[in-house]
Structure formats: structure tokens, C-alpha cells
Image 1 (tube, rainbow, N blue to C red):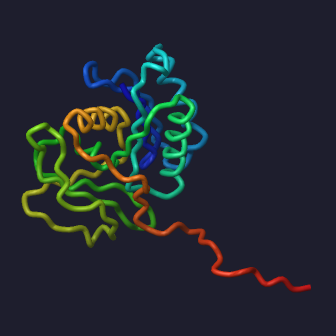
Image 2 (image 1 turned 30 degrees about the vertical axis):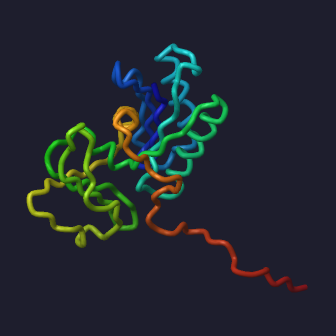
Image 3 (image 1 turned 180 degrees about the horizontal axis):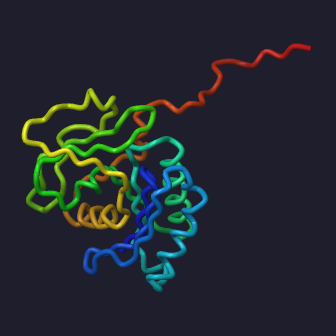
Length: 202
């Protein structure tokens, strides 16, 4: 049983178990209020579930692609919760959660702001029903999206933490590799560190 968190597009929190399904899920479509709502959504899911945190096997978190600020809120929340509960964190590509349960070839597209989009291509589900990503995640202008014959375009505005949690559960069962520890921003943050000491004048 996992607590699942995704803040790559809006904010979504869920508790999912492979034997039961999605037990509780709360989401907000606000793409900028992640920090203000994440704690409330976690508390709401735990209250709906009514179980003990000790019964969780871990925390699943969406690693994007997504905007820098939103992603870091969700990842920080997942890691802080897991640390406090003494549970492991497993990382999942957020687009994979959108593709969870989709059997046909699909090009998933989400908003990257600045007149750009994130995209990932999936050929089908494998024998275990897990999405098979064959391209991306990538970042491009809408007019530069790859043209894939036979692929249906799916524009997604949200990522379900429930789907992300169920996908993580099945990835564990079938011994599939989880995502890495680095968030998939796919572009550099707006703020960068200075390359040298700041000159002070009197």
C-alpha cells in the first residue's frame, strides 16, 4: 500500500493498494498553489483511509516532466513524509501514470508553459499491462511535436496520483525499474547560481 503524490500538473495525492485499488484520492487543478494545498490533500487522504501510517509500504512520487516549482514541492513533500514515517520512496515518470491503462499507441502531451509542451510516446501496454514508453519525455514547441503514424494524441491537464500509485505497485510486483532520483524539469530553472564572488563597492 502506497501514499502517492504528483505535482507535475496540479496537485494530486492518493492511497493505493494493488489488491484493493485506489482507496482515497484528492486533487487540485491549480497549477501554481502546490505548496498551499499539498499538506491538506495528504491529511484528507489519510483521514479517508483511516489506517495507520505504519501500514504503508512506501511513498510513490511523480518525477515529471513538469515545471520546476511544482515538481520540487511534491518531491520534497514525498521525501519528508517518507523520512518521518521511516518508509522508502519510489520514483515514477508522471507521463507513465497517464498512460497506465491505455492499450493503444498514444502520444501524451502536457503543458510546459512558455508556449511549450512536454510529450512522451507509448507504443502499447506490455504483457503485464504496463505502459511501454518508446519516446520522451521531451520538451518542444507544439508545432514541433513528433508525428507518429498510428498514434493517438492525448492532451492531459492532470496526473492522477491514484493511477501513479497503482502503476508503482505493479512495477514493483513485476520487478520493473523505477525512475531516477532527479526530477524531469527538461529545462534549466530561471534562477542560477553566480559563477563567482559578487563585487562589493563602497
